[in-house]
Image (tube, rainbow, N blue to C red; front, side):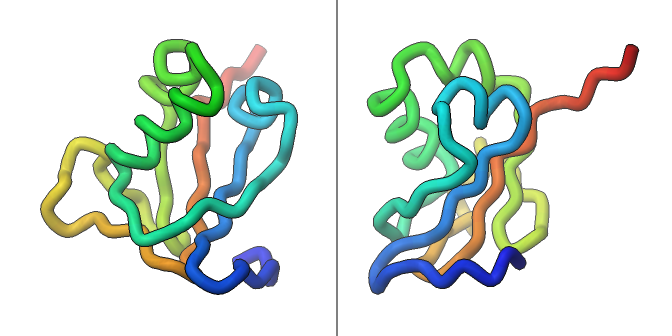
Length: 92
């Protein structure tokens, strides 16, 4: 965990690689609870085009555990959680 404490009722969202480039920030706090699907919908509203250009190929972690964005059953993002969007890594 990064050690950054979220404000009450929020979770910490970390952006890596192309996600950070697209949003022009390394992290931000968002209100919880949420689900991975609702999170991606919220990010698309805030950053139009991010879903197709970044999120569709990215992994998502909640408290360092990978979660399935399409699994609405158990994947809940709670206030105080640390969430990360991890785009695929390319090597050259």
